[in-house]
Length: 281
Image 1 (cartoon, rainbow, N blue to C red):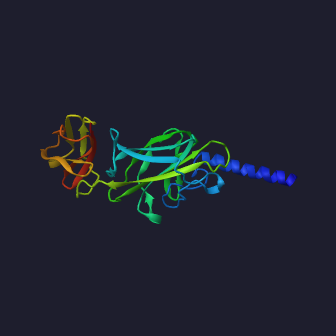
Image 2 (image 1 turned 180 degrees about the horizontal axis):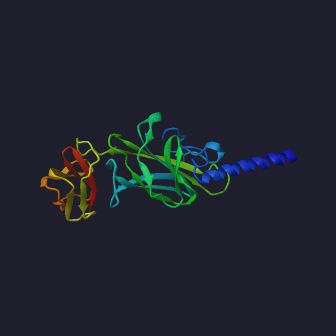
Image 3 (image 1 turned 120 degrees about the vertical axis):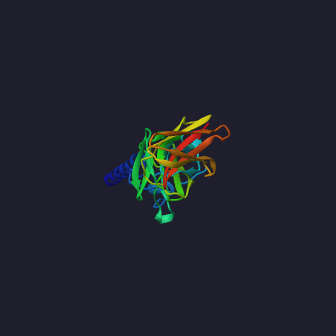
C-alpha cells in the first residue's frame, strides 16, 4: 500500500509539473513547437494533458499596417501589428503559439522579428524558430497584439502559423481542453525592380494617416530623383520626377481619389531606393 501511495504521489507531482509548465507556454515547458510550422505536432494532446483539435475552438490571425488597415502583402523591412484571437463555446482559459516563417517543410526559417509583446506573452525558441506564446494562462476570449517587422527583400511568401488551446481550467489532464490551428500567407510586395539598398536619403511622408494632400519631403540627395506611390497590390497610383539640390525638397500629391488603405511611397535616385508606408483614410 505504501508503494502504491508513493507511486501515486510521484505521478501526481509529475503531472502537476507538466501542467504548470504548459500554462507558461509549451515551448517554455519543454513541449516544443505546436504551431504547425516545421518541427511541430500541430496540436496540444502530447503528454496526455489536453485533447486534440476541435471545431469548438476557433483561431484567427490579422495583420495590420499603420492606421489599422488589414494587409495580405508585406513590404520588406516594414513593421506591422499582428493580432491573434481565439475563442471556445464554453472553455475560458487560453494558451497559444505563433510563428512566422519563410520556405516550406523542413527548410522553413525564421522570418522577421517580434517586438512590443503585451502582458502574458513571451518570446521562446523551439525548432530553431522564434515562437510567441503565453507566459501564463490567459482568461478568454483570447486577443493579443504585438509588432512584427518583416524580413529583408527576396524571401517571397511568409507563412504565419497559430495554434490556440482552450481549456476549462480544471487544473488536471482533461480531454475537453481542445485546440484550433490556422495559418495565413503574406506575399512580398515588389514595387520596383531596383534593389533596396541602405543609403542616407531622408524621406518623410506627412500627414500619416492622410485624408487630402500628402507631402513627401526628401533630403540628403543631389540631382534628379523620382517619387512614386503604389497601392497594396503594387499598382502605381502617382509618380513624378524632381530635380533637387542638397536642401530638402517637398513633393505633394492629391489623395482625394485614392481608396482607403495602405500605400508605399518609393523614392529612387541613382539605383538607391527608400520606402515609406502611408495610410489613406
